[in-house]
Image (cartoon, rainbow, N blue to C red; front, side, top):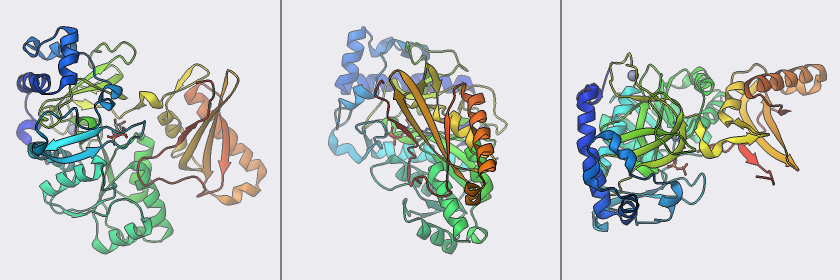
Length: 433
Ligand code: ADP
Ligand code: ZN
C-alpha cells in the first residue's frame, strides 16, 4: 500500500515515543516562554518545562479549554512576532465564538505534510483530479486539504462549496476522480447528481470526508451512491486544522500524525487521563507548531485510541470515529443521546431517506424528542396503513437503540434542509436546560 512518508508512518513505537518526548519538551518550553496563558497556567500548577521528563509528565500541565482559548482572541496565543505569521484562519464557530489559528511558513509546510499523508492513505495520488468542495474561507478545511493534495501532485479544482448543480457539471466536465467535502454536503451533492441524471457520467473513485461527525451507515450510503471508497479525516483549527488524523483504505480508525500531535484521552468529567482503549475526550498537544502552539487542548470530541497494529503496515496509533462532541450530547429524561446514534438507525433504513432533523422540547421537567425523516417515496403519504407501519418501525428501531421513546414524523421527500458545510441537524428548544 502506498505511503507518503514511510519512515515516519512505519517508525517503531519506541522510536516514535522518543521523538515525541524530544518534541514535547521543545513545544512546552516554546509555549511557556512565549504565550502568557500557558506560562500562567503552568506557574499556577507549579510545573516548569524542565519537569517534562517522560511523555506521561504532560498530565501535570493543566488542561486548556475552549473558553480559555476564546479569551485569547484574536492573537494572544501567537508565540512568534506577528511578522512571522503568514496565514490566519478561524474555527467555524459551530459552538460559539470562533478561535483563531495563526501559522508560520514552517507551520504551513508541516500542515500540508500531514495532509499529504492522509491523502495517500485514503487512495489519492498525483494522477487524481480532485474537487475540493469545502468552503475556501477562514475555515481550515479547504486550505488544509488543498495543501496536502498539492504536495501529492494532484490537479486541484478549488471550487469551494455551494452552487451544487454547477459542482456536478464541473465534476463531469473536468473528470474529477476525487472529492473533498463534509459527509452531509457529499450526500446532498449525490442527490443532485442523481436528479440531474449525471451520476453515470462521473469518474469519482475516492472521497475524503471530514469536519463533522458521521456514522459508518453514512459512509456506506456515500460509497453506494457515488460508487467510491470513502475515508474520513479529523482535525481542528485550534491545533492547525484537518490533518491530525486520517484513515487508510482499511477504514478502521484514523491514523494519528503522532510526530506532530500528542493525543490523550481524558475522562470528560474529571479531566483525568484514561488508559488507552477507553472512551473519553480527546486532548491534543501540538509537537511542532511554531506560530500558535496548543498544550493539552480539550477538544470536547469523544473518541477512543486504538493501539492494535493496522493491516496497512502503518504503525501510527489510530483514533476511532468521533462519537460526537461532548456539547452535542443530549440528555433526554436522564438518558445520554448522541445524534450519531440516531443517524445510525435512520441511514440505510428501508423506506426513509438519509436526511433527518432532531427537535428537542420540554413540558415542564419532561423532555420530548422528535425525529423528522424523509420518506423515499411520496406516494406513501396517501397510503395511511403503510405509512403508519413505517412510522412504527422507525420508532421501534430508535427505541431499541436509544432506550427512549421518540416521536417520529415522516415528511415528504426533499423537504428537510440540506447543508453545504457542516450539518446542523439538532434544534434544542428546551426551556429547562
Ligand atoms: P468548529 O469547532 O467551530 O466547528 P473547526 O472548523 O475547527 O471549528 O472544526 C473542528 C471540529 O470539527 C472538531 O473539534 C470536531 O468536533 C469536528 N470534526 C472535524 N473532523 C471531524 C470528524 N472526522 N468527525 C467528527 N467530527 C469532526
Ligand atoms: Zn491503516
